[in-house]
Length: 79
Image (cartoon, rainbow, N blue to C red; front, side):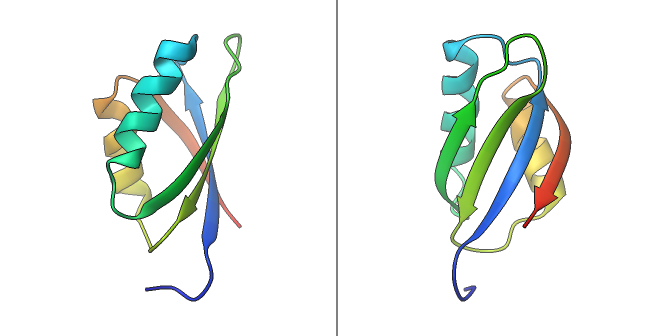
């Protein structure tokens, strides 16, 4: 377990509506490491999803989860 919560900003392409947001939110919330999800939908561009983590997670695991939901992870910003 980490001390304090870490947030990541995920940049995701292909999300165009609230159904897309629901798919991605559901996929991410199924991961044990994810505590909280905040999505800013940008139908014309790259959507930003800020997640707060309970525990470390790899970019590969995030990419796999997003791709299984049908979208493209184009970036992960750790802060």
